[in-house]
Image (tube, rainbow, N blue to C red; front, side, top):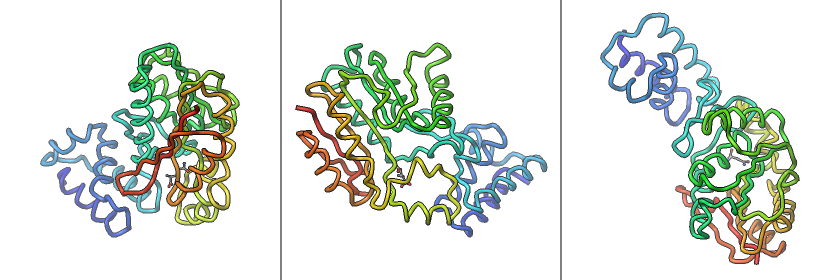
Length: 285
Ligand code: GLN
């Protein structure tokens, strides 16, 4: 059987089972089995696939059919141009979260701080580290800290810090709820906190989601964490420092009000590619 035929068989099964990107999923799984890049896989379409590789591939396709995320199966997710290690200890990075990274970089660049030690930045609820580490890669001079209250997630974050910055990196990765681990005098705070309604997390779990509940469940309305984040960030940010938060669908009005109540000004909402408000930004006066 050729690689092309195997891909068609795998994506056919996936297409019937429900994932919305069956061909891409099949390609990622087969590339993983063969230890190929996606480009190399596509170039190798006419080549013969050894039977034992086909069997391995179909076993992974079956896991995907039963609802497991591709990223968990292959232990990898591309985010902001980097390959992050992921497993069940962390949320799978979402493409829309790249918005948070883009805007954080823009804020630092506009303030002329992307290359200065003076910019102390903190990413709370860091999970895999995809947000904070991607910002730090783009703004090498800043002093970046990341924190999470999940020790499991911190282990994954440390793997990614080594992956992106090498063994002797200077990224601070610490245990702490909300901003407890962050110093004062911050130029920037970013967070993608758990913001999904608890009842919806129940549904996700019923549908086979294996993502950590701690990273998703934001209480009854999904808004439980925002008031504390806003208050703590206001205390720890410098004058003119920025807070950037990812939010869930239909939460922008509430979160904007929470930030205003905490004292933030120049509030700005940013929509994602689906046209949904995904980011709330505020400045400490
Ligand atoms: N965007 C994620 C989802 O919809 C939720 C991420 C979060 O709670 N921070 O599943």
